[in-house]
Amino acid sequence: MSDTTQKKLIILNDSHKKIIDEWFSMLQQRQGKFNGITYNGRKLRAELRRYSLSEFIFLQDGYNILANKLINNDSKLAQTEIHYYALQIFANVAAFAESNSDKIPFAAQLSEKINGGERNYLSELRFERLLASENPDEFCQRLIRAVKLRGEKGVNLTSLADGIFLWMQEWDAREHNWPADTNPFKRLSVRWAMDYFSTKNNTNTNTKE
Image (cartoon, rainbow, N blue to C red):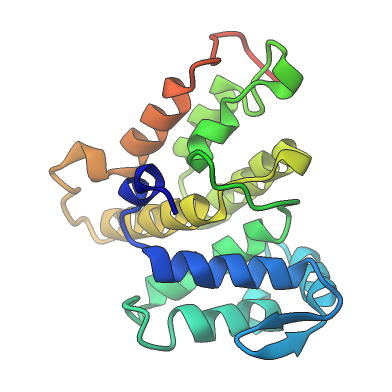
């Protein structure tokens, strides 16, 4: 992981990135290894897609083996309801990614141009709607749409996961009327907006809807 990418993370770290990379790589193979065990990764990925936006995601093997490695061990992620919920959203969304590309942050990838043209992968309007998501289901649905739009270009899965964990943490705080982080640069909306609008090739032209 580059220093630039590392500085972008709030909740996850290098060890989490390695786990996510290995898990996603396994999902692309019929006989893929994860945590020393061989799985039919394509079958697990298909199941995650089939139960997309469903309360049954937590029952899927593709989710559980990731949770057992990422949370149910000594990886420094607390075993909280919010962390498990965030990981369910991530596993759901990541199943629709075609590749794992970690050169730039996830939000910056959304504002890249499609085939060098004028349109962004995710329009400014849809990006603002993504940030304005009011509940986890809506957030998940909009993330899946954004990941699908990226297609074969792929997404930065660790950056995506870190953002999901942070969004869930902030959503939980709002649900309990807890104060927001006083440092705006640790808030997801600010961080993603900075990444999205910092992309050099970004324009104000509305893009693919």
